[in-house]
Length: 345
Image 1: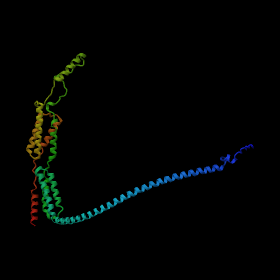
Image 2: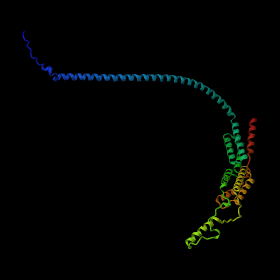
Image 3: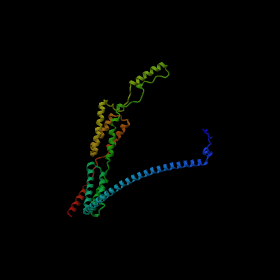
Image 4: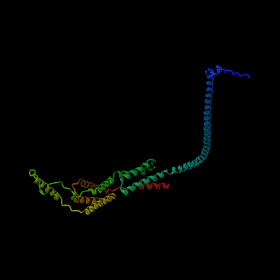
């Protein structure tokens, strides 16, 4: 047998052992990596584009849906406007008919506008007469007659006689003595509201003075004597009150009698207010004089509130309220005569 000869193994070629040292290998590897990165970047961009396209398609669908809703709403509103236009057209026709009717009524009323104006003048004259008769308010009567004369001033000279009569009555009212009933009533109201605050004659607190002619203790006396005298002096001042009245000693009134007195004064003043409104001079003056007597007899005349109330009552009692007010018989007669003549013609 021939013996097998084992050949020695040859080393691999140098190009196979050091291929990573080949620059072309690294260039290919870089190119392959760039290709993969570019593919991944393109795929991500395509995905974003696809998502954005889907969102825009969804937004377009929503816009189309809203546009469709708005279009339907516009169609409905157009139909509603058309219906309203038809209704307005019908109402316009009705208004035109009413305008024609009003024009006819106005033409008819223009014929009798003088009668309507005379009716307003008569109403103003009647109001003036009522003010004079019921409340004696001369100023309100003057305003009412002036309003009537202003209405007549818009007409021609056909009513000159009536205006002349109104002018005479106005002149008579302006020459009538003015009695400020409202102002007098307010002054009486002030006195009535202050009755409860008026001090009675025996409610006056006298000033501190030496009681029964006793003089204060001598400052030169010993201290224990001054203390004893001071205590005695205080006790005497509490027990003794000296008060001088320059008039007859006022009556002693219990609290109940004082309340009744104030209520009687209040009733007297209320009666004077009623007499003022009714122009009753005798009752008005007598009530005020009676209240003045009570104030002088029962209340402290040195108190400012009592003096003010007494002075106010004296001034009110001196005012003449029974003023003879004129009547408007001439104006009312002229109006009635003018109406009668127009009815005849």
